[in-house]
Length: 424
Ligand SMILES: [Zn+2]
Image (tube, rainbow, N blue to C red; front, side, top):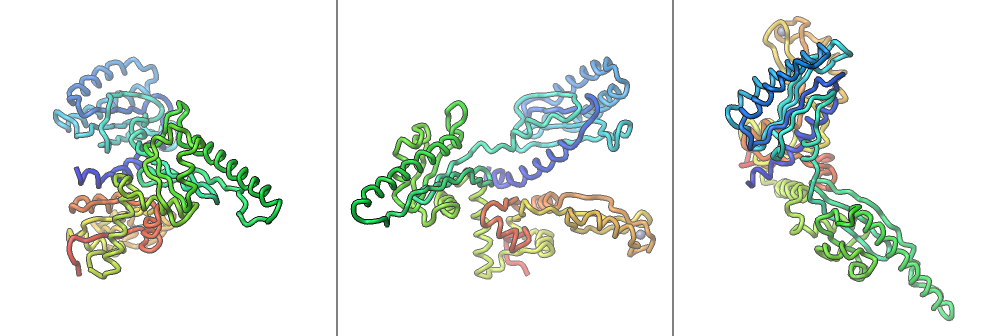
């Protein structure tokens, strides 16, 4: 169970990437097939269903669409039969069809098979001009959203935390004048002004919070709310009529923060560890702090830099691999068409075109022919993550939305590892 949970951020990353690819595939008619197989259904059930669909498909009027659909079904059945009697634990999503490469008539058959990170609930078979992706997209939606409010007399910040994402929803500025006003007769008038400005600020803050955290049906859309701030305002505000009673009921904690505004939100999140312990953002923070602590104590139990990490992975020395979600790089395989020469290189996505040109002009280091080509391009995070998982390491894909995630990106080029043992 523990290891399942740890893998989630990597699994979700892979799914997100795959969905991006699938979303870009478009057909002209109804020739793209999407198939969702729940884990509870026997494989033979699905193959029987497809066989009857194959019969139906012979009625499709357009010759080319008919051919692609029947072709896809045949290939799907073949592929399904490789799974034996039952599906993997979360079921299977399959996508197949002739994808136009460059206008009509240039279709190339493509098939994608996904073992989803969460179980597929219902069987679905669809043919359309694009793949049906909603059930998988649904899996990316974080259900556990927490609301954060930092409020004091200077202003109010409304934020949410879900998965490894923190979002500042709104900032409400207060126009409460400072209390050091004029003395004498006008002092009372001044105090009344302050009171009025304060009331306006609470009303406005309440409206924005209620809007942000209540759904159209009036039910809270956050799992719980944590309130913080530097002064006594927060305690008063939580109990006041400015905050909707349905939200009052789900306030989990009211905490003192050293700061207000966005810095206060950061402070509040770190102080809510016990509540957020299952939320990815906090797991990210914790693991990076562990990495930093080893680094500062010079224990030799951590490493960073691609070369070092690959070396540690080869030795099976990596316990946890930390990869920044922001890494836009590819792992490219270059091979020679004339001999068996092959090399792998890491190339930034923006430099891929330039690298392609460079390769076209280079000679093979082994046979000196000019037959070098790029034979394979894979996403760097996926390649390194798969490598790490194969060695038994835990892979964490870290967003740059936490301070720690930003630091992993800026100071360590988005790549770090905690080791199993001291590694020379
Ligand atoms: Zn060669």
